[in-house]
Image 1 (cartoon, helix red, strand yellow):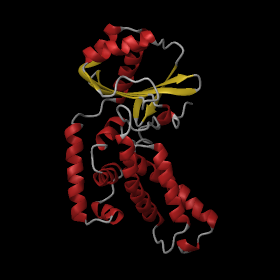
Image 2 (image 1 turned 90 degrees about the horizontal axis):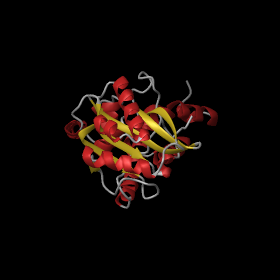
Image 3 (image 1 turned 180 degrees about the vertical axis):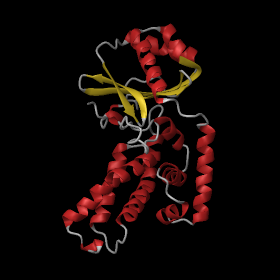
Image 4 (image 1 turned 135 degrees about the vertical axis):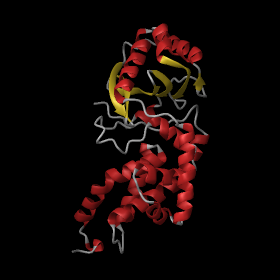
Length: 292
C-alpha cells in the first residue's frame, strides 16, 4: 500500500473530498459560521496538500481543522463584540431525513454553545455530537485526557442547564411552525397569541443590515405578538414567498423575496407552543442558504 505522502495530487484531492463533509460539520458546529468554516477548510486543504509523514488522513485532517477553528474563534468573538443586535449562527439547510441529519445541531443549541469557551465547545462538539472518545479529543486539542474529561463535564452541564427540555416531536414542530406562519401572514393577533408561550423569547438578527426587532432579545408573548403583527401590517408579506425547509435539523420557514432568501424563521417548540423565535434577516448570513 502506498504511503500517504506518495499520493498523487488527484488521489490526495480525493481523500480530502471524502472527508470534507465531516470536516465541515465539525468546524461549523464549533464556529456557527459558514463563511468562516469555508475559510478553515481552505486552510486545512493547504496543510493537507503540503503534508509529510501522515499515517492516518482522517485523524490528521480533523486535528488540523479543529485547531484552525479554535484559532478562528478569536476573530469571530471580536466580530461579535461589534455586531449590531442579537447574534445568531448562520443557518444551513440540512436533510429532512432523520437518518441523514444525525450530526445536525439545532440553532437553539448552537446559541447555547456560544456561551462556552472555544475549547469547551470543541470538546462538546467532538464528544457529544460526533462521538469522539476523550483520549482521541486529547490528541486533537493537545490536552491530557483528564483535562478533556473535565472540559466535557463542564460543557455538558452548562448546556443541559440551559437546554433542559426534550426535543419537540418533528411533526408537532412542523405543525406549530405552520400555525405560527399562518398567523403572521394572516395578521391574526389572537391566533399568534395562542401559538406563543407566555414566556416566549424572540432573537432577531438583522446585523444592522436588515429590519429586526430591536438591539436585544425580547421576552414575553404580550410584547412580541403585537410587535410581529404590527410589523406585518406595516410591511405586507404577500410579496414574499414561503418555503418550508429543514434548517439545522429543525422544520423551519424560509421567506423569499423573488429568488433570494429574505429571512429564516426557526422556532423552539415545547408541547404545542413556541418558546423561542430565531429570525435571521441579515443578508450576509443568508447568502449560503439554498433556496431550491
